[in-house]
Length: 360
Image 1: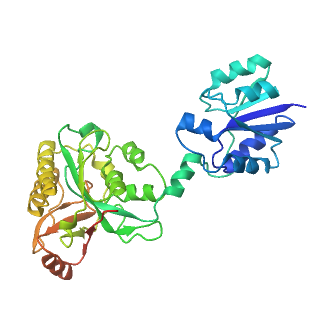
Image 2: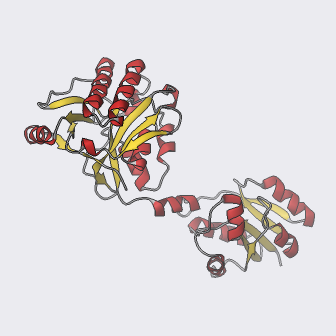
């Protein structure tokens, strides 16, 4: 009888595990599956399992292709199953192509003459998932805010970051969900960051990979009126709930979608952008909308110099700017009080209210 041995955490079983078990079992007559105990999982990964060990063992034992299940307790990283492996003396140790401990496992196989076998990648029968992606999906919120930015945009792009400068932005409602999205798409409100969060994905990695910055997923996840330190990765300088902005913000749809990655490398005045961030930061610190408006106005000047079209003048507004860097999308308008904003919304097509959103 040819014994086949596999090991892992198998913390949340999914179809990819089943395919792996089936392909491993096909190489022998008796499949032994070992998994790290809750103690080992905590020791190496500082997290607890999704279900108790006895429940996990019962689930694995219930699979038709598995003949034996072992809970391992060894604390040697990558070889928590070593003692059990040497005891049962299998004929094969099956691993995947991305195994991080191949050298250690080959040496272990040599001790008993077992065959170290790398299972080649085969086309999955289902869209590939991982335990971590399942956890993120379960933990993903059902709703998320979008965002408006006041000043300092582009200073969140790692290659444009400047020590000592800031990005000032605010999460806003109405909220969005996977089933309800009451805004235009590709509109400069951080929709891609919200979409990633709702789907349980890492919004930071996806934004950075596009060559743009991290401010969208940062403020959408944090919520509130936030001041961030410019740098390669989000570092919160301070945050407040943004209540003083209630009734004073609106967004105007320009009628054009925008494309931030397509314009990221255009020349622009980063000195003035940095100046706008310092002024807007002081406005956020002191709950002074006039000072925030000053930062917004300076920043919008850099957008006009870059070649963006002038925005319409709306009566009662004290400042405005494009919400994104892609020559379109929504534009932010600030007002001194709710009365002026409400009048503007009533008389200006394509203008709608947004409110600061801060999750308790």
